[in-house]
Image 1 (cartoon, rainbow, N blue to C red):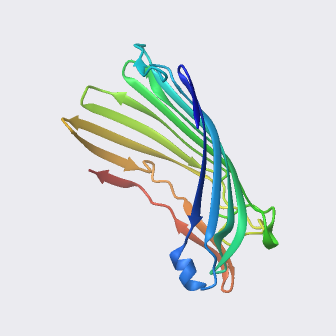
Image 2 (image 1 turned 90 degrees about the vertical axis):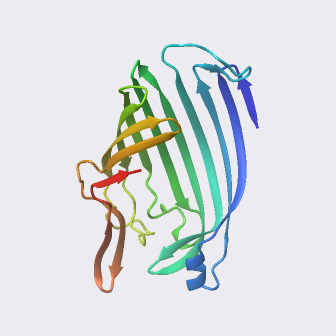
Length: 232
């Protein structure tokens, strides 16, 4: 459902879905399929368009904003503990925000933000935070329009701390936060866009996964991608 007020649009959505992990359900034959419901409320703003009449207004520096708050409840969510998939109920509360627009004649900027509160709501871990769910992440960037064909974009990505995969009691040290910088150049020709990008420009070392084990004792990590070039 939605309500349009000139340049603003207020909206609400409700959705239902299922949570399926084929490998987990193969390993643990009695594992239940999760059932999820999500409700959200938000608004959109477009400085250069009246949404009701779909007329575009000529302004010097147009920009757009979208903000959503949501609640997602899952019955029999699937997670892993000591190599064994488990079922428990969970809840997630969150806010998603995105802003992008033109700040100068040849400069565009964008920012996206996601904050999430994820907890178990049943079983032995009621009230504990869900593992491997960052509480906050964002990305921000600037694009320089060198010409009608060429553009260069600089992007920063940030992921906050997370609990390790099997630390459902939230007692161990968390997986450290990390931020990365990417650089991308685009060339537009007719209906094609050619690009060259460098992800993790400064070749930062970081981990995207962590798991604690008692036998053999130790912490196990999966490292994130180092500097990577892409052409396409």
